[in-house]
Length: 193
Ligand code: IMP
Image (cartoon, rainbow, N blue to C red; front, side, top):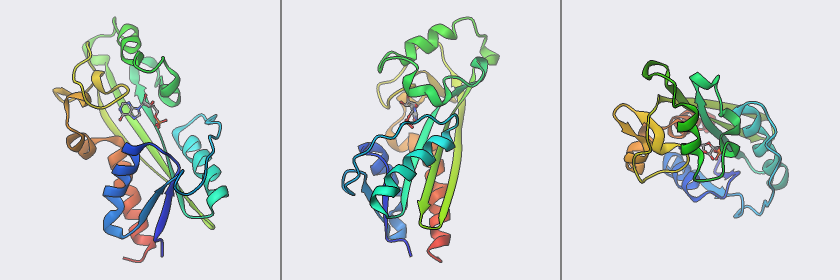
């Protein structure tokens, strides 16, 4: 029976979302810091799953408690899936949207599809399991909206960018929200519910 999980992050938004979605299972989610694991492993994988496993393993080896870690990014069709696992390193923080819009300036409307992807890895003494989910949309032509972070202002989901949605609206359709829902089902089954 899993009663306590460590999330390999200190990001307050990721923790809040994981706690909200997993709370009906009665599982307490600790941050990396709360669990006493200060480490920053090299995210040198070539897929979201590889990087999620690298992060989960690094923290698990310190805390010896069931651990989850996520990795996510934006894959743009017209750019052959870039920036993908390099999304966080694509441009200095705050400049990623401008750089992407510039790279996409000659791409026609029907070729602007993109997807946010998220993989969450779960690890304990005898299990390694990953769940993944996507959020499909399009890259717009200008930055719109004040909410969110990263590429949200240029990622169109229907008529709105993710930065024009409230956190609640975004969590319902986001890659991370969907991956957390899959993790919820996995943990629920493990706990024998
Ligand atoms: P990480 O999984 O926290 O390392 O995120 C990787 C990078 O992908 C972030 O720095 C963002 O640039 C981008 N990213 C991941 N998820 C989102 C999202 O929901 N909105 C906007 N950008 C995102």
